[in-house]
Amino acid sequence: MKEQVKRLVRYEKLKLFFEKYERVLLPGTLLFGVAVDFVTFKSIQIQTAFLILAVHIVIVGSAIVLLYIVNRKGKIISYLCLLAPLILQFSLGALLSASFIFYWFSGSFSVSWPLLILIAFLMLSNEVFRTAYVRPLIHMSVYYFVLFSVFSVIFSYLFNSIDPLFFVASGVLSLGFFLLYLSVLAKFFEKIRLTGKRVIVCTLSIFVIMNALYFLNLIPPIPLSLREAGVYHSVMRSDGQYQILDENRSLIERILPVQTIHIQKSDRVFVFSSIFAPTELNTIVVHNWQIYDEEKHAWIQKDRLSFSITGGREEGYRGYSMKTAITPGLWRVDVETKRGQVLGRVRFRVETVAELPQLIKLIR
View 1 (cartoon, rainbow, N blue to C red):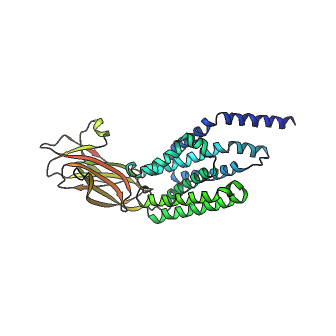
View 2: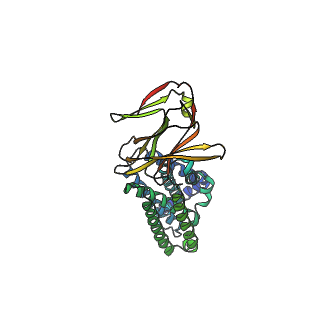
View 3: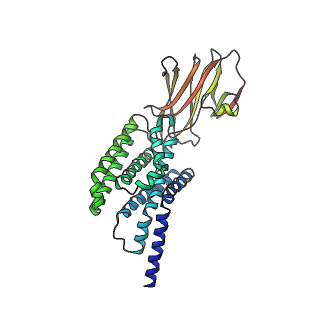
């Protein structure tokens, strides 16, 4: 009897502590999950990362179940139900941050910003997470969103391909998995049955929106990622290395978003890029050269120069394109897939001079 009273007291103390600091604990747990994920995924092998993501998917699904259990008999189940919101926040934070990391490193923010901002908002909006995530429509919708995001990442790596077929397949599989999960929950919990139709509508909307973003090229081409890109005076391959001639720029000039390259009228301009791809992935990379038309206030495409890449090199597969008879003005070169998904972007201004500035040799 005394032991039972002690357990009840401990439970009530924990419950009071949770209720008192809920406003801090929920977003804090979310951010902790994000931080753990960011450190983990930068230091482990991709197969291990996928295993961890699978564990988080199971944890989120289990935590959602715990939110609906009314008859909390037993010491373990009562504590798990009490901690379910924290568990949900931690694993959702891990899954969202994993999606953010993979999508961030596989595309240009200037193109993929709608998806990246959405993920960042879900990760960092403390008020939304604190008040809304106990509602079935919210946490179910976010759960499907992370399922779709993670499945699309895993499929790309498993099949070593950026073919749209695998993105669509990952969406269909995640949708089937989620609807099966929802139907099982609806059999046991009335609250799920009452909101089931709205959850399905939201889920299908997410499915359609994600596919629309992908085919509009607003979702980056996982698992490719741009390691390096820049504009130079010369790029030449010799003995397995690339010898590059660049202007001797100051530190401030190197970090500017738009660099200036000074050339003479007959000079060529080179854009060099290094792209990481998993082993056995073979694809085409395109350098899309565009100049800004001051009168039309629009970017005008001048050339689409392509080369093939093969994955497996940790530092990235190196390649370059060049343009002759280049006119002065503001230029950009989008590093793209053959389908037009943007991996990164190099912006630069071309100015003609009578005498070239001092050039330095770089090895890549």
